[in-house]
Length: 391
Ligand SMILES: *[C@@H]1O[C@H](CO)[C@@H](O)[C@H](O)[C@H]1NC(C)=O
Ligand SMILES: CC(=O)N[C@H]1CO[C@H](CO)[C@@H](O)[C@@H]1O
Image (cartoon, rainbow, N blue to C red; front, side, top):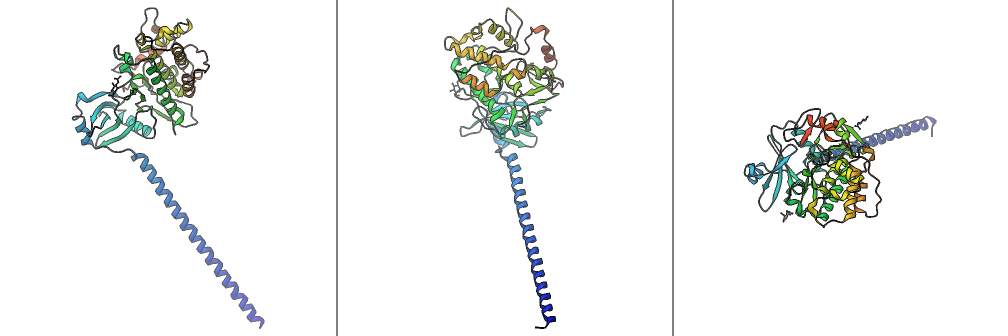
């Protein structure tokens, strides 16, 4: 073979190899690119459908059906006032009765609270939280549809001279523990960390068997899981249930909910409201009264007289002790809800000694009280401080 041909053929071979390599790289590049495109598209579609789902996961109810079910939103079907408007009882036919929370047109803050409540509660499910069935959005109308609670709210029992007799000691303990479990779920067991910020007896609804369900998430806040505290300039809440650090500085955390829970617990045991509590011997609130009895070791006197003999003494004392632990002045002294549930449901649990409760000063002179009275809304029950918006 002549050398020239040899050189030629090796030149040819080189070219072939080069072409093969280039085309292989091209094919690989093309394949890689198309794979990447397909994967990206898939991801996008997935993300799209997920965000769609998150918004639209809720069943939509038809406006006409609800209008018919409430006799065109007649007053006689009003169950009560929610955070942002009236709540109606609606009969949707086929024995389906629901509660409809309708955003009032004149409620300025309402639309935010509505959205807040939808996104918040649509993602939650627990037997001690009220269940959202769907919503209705039509034109200006915004409504939330909840399961109907035939026995209304806890305050309609414990503060009513006749109906309070229907709740014996065991039932009250069940309500306290159920509420504690619901709150524990909000604080740490759900996918989110939620601070309710307006826990009170009228936000605890009772089902057929008088099981408690926490409701009204209009002003609840979601915390990041590593977040412990937040501050707000718009303090919204209910007089008598707000912790000192929240009422005074707008600081809120799981511990401000724990404070409200403690107030609620003591109200259930005593059958009287913390707010507007009167006692012939002093000017303290219910919390102050409970504390005075505790240090005199006379806590049983706190017990609702309508309870007769249905109670178990050591259970009552333990409940009161847990209540007092929850309403301690310093947030860091208050237990978290998991400890509260543990202390309430384990007879053997050893409980720390409570310290002085928040707002433990006789009424006429408390900084808390004067501050709190500034922004009282027209109902006198729900207040906002710093900005005077009624809710
Ligand atoms: C509120 O929080 C700030 C720090 O974030 C703290 O300095 C202040 O003392 C707190 N207020 C109350 C009443 O605890
Ligand atoms: C104590 C009380 O009023 N219980 C009622 C709760 O609701 C159910 C269902 O409507 C009634 O049957 C109970 O009497």
